[in-house]
Amino acid sequence: MKVLVLGADGYLGWPTCMYFSQRGHEVAGVDNYFRRNAATELDCEPLVPVPNLVQRARIWRKITGKDIHIHIGDITDYHFLKDIFKNYRPDVTIHYAEQPSAPYSMIDYNKAAFTIRNNLISTLNVTYAVKEITPDCHIVKLGTMGEYGTPNIDIEEGWIEIEQNGRKDRFLFPRQASSLYHTTKIQDTDLLWFYVRTWGIRVTDLMQGPVYGISTDEADLDPQLMPHFSYDEIFGTVLNRFVVQAVAGHPLTIYGKGNQIRGYLNIKDTLQCVYLSAMRPAMSGELRIFNQVTETFSVNELAKKVKRVGESLGYQVEVRNYENPRVEKEEHFYNPKYSGLLELGLKPHYLTDEVIEEMFRVVEKHKHNIHKDKIFKGIKWQQRSCEEKIEIGVG
Image 1 (cartoon, one colour):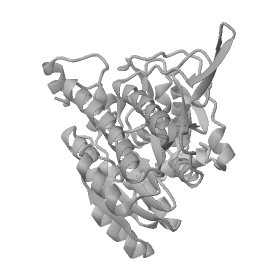
Image 2 (cartoon, helix red, strand yellow):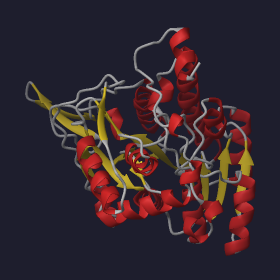
Image 3 (tube, one colour):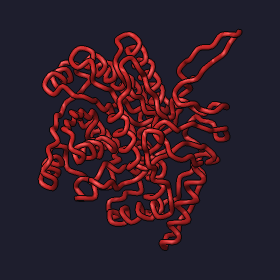
């Protein structure tokens, strides 16, 4: 297939490019380096500096003999994106090209406005490019389990059947996000559902839980092929942050009571899920939704796992409860269904002590890059004054 990866420089984007390329597909990657630039602006660079996309594609070709075609530009510029579709004519477009951070979206007005513009216009542009240039192209869109929130009922896989006054109909499962970022993802889903109904395009929307991990089979070929691995509170996911905190001697940052439950998956399983979705595409006029998780844990459960493994490796791991900077339920029911991708053939990598130990070993090799002052700055969901933002270094 011809595979177009939007957001190719990200934590998931670059590993996805390599994963498809290694399996013989023709891959093009697009990115505008937002995340690199934002990390520099907010003083939260990833654990390991990695070459830019052009350089990484060159390294990939040297190692494997396979090409990944790189385009640097912003897909909110419709003419730029349309030209790529005209020249490349992809069979599948994998859309990661969004501002990916809930904390980032809550810092201030400007970052909130950017999140809305970037995320919604990028999805609109992808949809229009498919309709105008390659109407049979399958869009694989990365959504988030955070769209659902924490309802007091089972979370079905994207859809729910409702009976009222003797009549039934099928609807998108009710959404109730807990950040502006997650709200834009809800709007993405609504936007795609509208155009699926109106234009008959084909879309798979992957409701992904927080991802953890550093290693993939392709990235392990050369350290310079590693994904962006963030350990700060803005772009780092919780388990990744905890492992770095343990290695650095920083207390594990439990928000509030720590009983918040979410669905998690290994980065290797993200690659599997996206690949399986692409290889068995949605039908024309179908919005197919999968809940992309493999296990559920509370934050406290993750902290206990990291503490146990860390102490077995000789670290003194402290767990500390911090005032919760987010507006979220800390005690709640959580039971998501996630059978669709298993039925497609997903073979999960579960969160064992061995997996966590492997993460520790990789972080240990780069512990000289850890800056403890970047780990936790206390970005709150409530608006701050200019003086407070300057004090925590996000103004």
